[in-house]
Length: 382
Image (cartoon, rainbow, N blue to C red; front, side, top):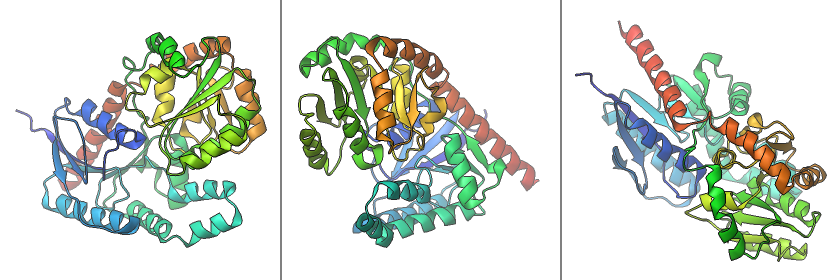
């Protein structure tokens, strides 16, 4: 009998509406039937079966202590375990494989600064957490143990190469997978119910925004663009933000109270893909938003930004649009170009492309990477 490969996955916590956490959940589900023995090392996890969970939740105060204490505790578990491979989804140096799902922190700060005022940039520059994260990334990418980096977009691969000079052979682009059965154009059967719930006419143009952290995801620019669109254009916003009141007030000041609805985080997002005509996510920086694939698989075109990994899949006018996150006139023009009729045509193209990004394809690519790394390890030990 062949001994199963023992894989440890490190992720600090699971949030039901978190894109990175949903990726880990999907990866665990996709891989657990592939003759692997999976162990998840985490502070907190809700749901899932078919894998062992090791919880390490050391005391902390503040974000720096939080991340540092978990990194130390996770590495102690790794050192005391007998894993064939360790794959981290956190910036922790005791791993063989790092999945760069959060991109490069230095690049995020660069993009964020474009939208900040002078005082906000100063506050960001003095924040010790950003120093910690950048130092942790440097330790990780310079670690002699690191064998491979999984990049969820070509954009992230190029950023890691540029900032850290990681060798080409260590950088592997493996796109996220999407459940093309759960996310399907048949979700449009939910269209009438969701629209009626919010008083949105059946023939109105309805955009959908899905994401937490509105500053990062480009909500400010989106509200400005919405204010310039016809009165029969609506927006549903799904996601969390500590300063949601500020964005609601901004929407009200732009006269959007009857056209933009902030619905908070939703455990059941698919019905909203069915209700909408298009997904819009003018994010300042997003390595690869899972919601883009979910929307495309559901038959929606995607309007996103140049610093979104999903832009790699978009052909302007064919399955969506791409523009700079801060270019409000361009965003307005693109949103205005999407009508319910054109959205349906572009959505068909989006669905066709998304069908190649299956969970099976993702797990196959990851297994091929695991096998190649283990073969190299065996060769070097002989």
